[in-house]
Amino acid sequence: MSASNYTPFAQTFFVDANQSPNGIFVVAVDVVFSARDDILPIFMQIRPTNNGIPSSYQIHPGATAVVFPQNVNIVSGSGADLPDLTDATNYTRFTFPAPVYLPPGEHALVLKTNSAFYNVFIAEMSEPILGSDRIVSEQPYVGSMFKSQNGSTWTPIQNQDLLFNIIRAVFTKNTSAVVQLDNVAPATANVPTDAFFVHAEDMGFGSTEIKYNYKSTEFGGSIAGAATAFMINRNYLPDIRQVVTTANGSFKILETLSTMSDMVTPVIDSRRTSLSAIEYLINNGELQNSNILITAPGYSFTNASNITVTISAPTREANAGGGTTATAAVANVYAGQITSIILTSAGSGYVENPTITISSGGGTNAAANIVSETSATGGNALARYISRKVVLEPGFDATDLTVYLTANKQSGADIQVYYKIMASDDPDQNFDNKTWVRMRPYNNFGVLAQNDDDYIEYIYRPTTALVVPATPIAYTSALVTYNNFKVFAIKIVLLSTSTINPPSLRDMRAIALA
Image (cartoon, rainbow, N blue to C red; front, side, top):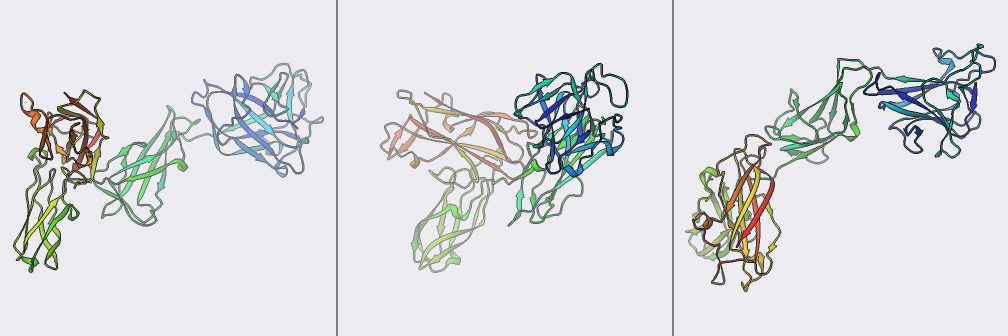
């Protein structure tokens, strides 16, 4: 029999949880038409249901298909036999752009068109089955039919059901398929990569599996021959620095999909897969030429090659990595005065301001300072965190500080902590003028993390606080010594011999003590 479909109508159906506990993927739906329009198309949608009623606005992702009149097969319903759905000329197939996943439960097929001329085959209670004398005496267990006058409110039609056939995907079990995604090259320059983050959205089931591997290009080398497993949606640190080059495909993501069920498959969305290449800007306390400030250019320097520049050794503790002494190659001279000093060796481990001495060269009275992390501003570290300025409540001036860090510090890495303070009665209330003071580790000084997930608590105290009983923090401003403070800030400096295993912090707490 046929029914008019000028207004949208729907047919609900079930995905059986016993037969398909993980759901199914629908490829197409077959419907039988007895009449069609000559111009206007007809649309098929699969929608979820709410309490057995088709949703008025939700459509399953990708579950919209359209058929144009020239592709609609017509079957006469007057006196004819029930159409043989094994014959492709008897039905019209609505094929979706991609397989549509349907979880177990009730769903709805919705047919929509702006034409009054489309008619479909239905079964109606108490009416004869086409081609026989049998009467439709019971409804099949497929759900209910609904009609709608406005596309949003559905009215159930209790004695009718749509003639349809759902085509599901059948997947090959116990085999693997590999999807390879290659990066698009950066437009202008290579991107050094010390870590990377692959954002990916996928869908898996208990009977399916997705494995992620990558191939990347070593810095100064070629792309790896073997793939390496990694986890998506989290930072991954390779063993050595990599590079995303200006050639396509210098980074490859390999996704291996497999299933143990022919009803479901894992799903990935390549449009929502992205790579973030991370370059860590970190050093090991080296000095740069820009850290050397000429405070007095001197005079009468006539022979630059004879100028001797000496830089003091670093002060970092040996079990924190120690360091090497920086050396200077040349002092540039113009009109008898020193204008700049160029380093031959940057050294390492400079965690406090070193001294610099200038002599010889026929001149006198030249002087320079080296800015490092104990200067009021600036510094020689590339990775640092500075807390906000903390102002204590009136009457709660402090005399001591303790800093707690939960950190991951592996071999070759170091964490230095500094403080600066200001007393309430200090006439110079410009906090930026105060210099930073290096703190000393109080516990777990030589304890290193064993892996990327191993975080250890470290405690830092001012140097004087290592004395028992503790000596209050003191600082001098304008020749006056202050033994308490109203304002403080904390600076954390991260150092490493390698960009591959930099230290990282999970949390920081600073406690001001009276």
